[in-house]
Length: 319
Image (cartoon, helix red, strand yellow):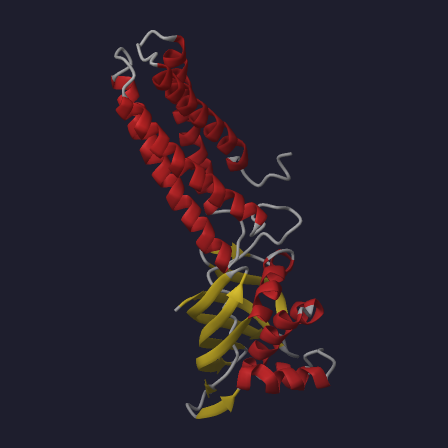
């Protein structure tokens, strides 16, 4: 079970939700029945369950934060996960206030104020739970059968517009990528194999990587990336080609066909056997019922192995 569940949050959250909602129900029932004295069985039970629930929600939030910084995700699910986290903080704060008041009034009769606060806190908790369910059932986070990696935008953009390449002699050269149609056609003519003619120029290698990801060509991606490639995105890192192809790559391949990318600016530099391509771009479209309109930057570092360029470092981030 530990190998399937990526963290303890899915386990802890059920205890927290069940205990806190049960406590709210018990105390609401006591108030409705007019049995509010501190020694009434339902009041005592409700308060006890509430305090146990507070311990559970503290553990749940801690496990949730660990999941937030470790579970793989793509750009839309990152936004949804952040929203879920913020609602979770709200539920925690509301129940901590309710629990603190309940503790200070533990020898006093149950008040309407206490129950109203618990009902409001439970409302926040239910919204948080719903948003947590969305993360699993809409975005597939933490589900072993889906890719479990991501970043902040998947803005692997080599689309419309002119792109400036700078070479060692400082000369600038304009390339119209036209939503990568020209490069895509060039690759198609070669059977999607990204031949040496493409790999001989770092800028074309960057385009070939984008095209391979957009078309779901795993073999082409494997040929372009170095075995020990380091990929940085959204505070996460994949430290090898196998790591990326086992997760993040599939997420990218699912995302890219749903958006249009426009290259705003590109700089290509080369020094001996090293080259780097920096692309600023805009990505627009819709993915998993989320509208995408983001500015982003991409940096690829490549090393020439004597025959072709291999991408050794990728950094994807918001501009």
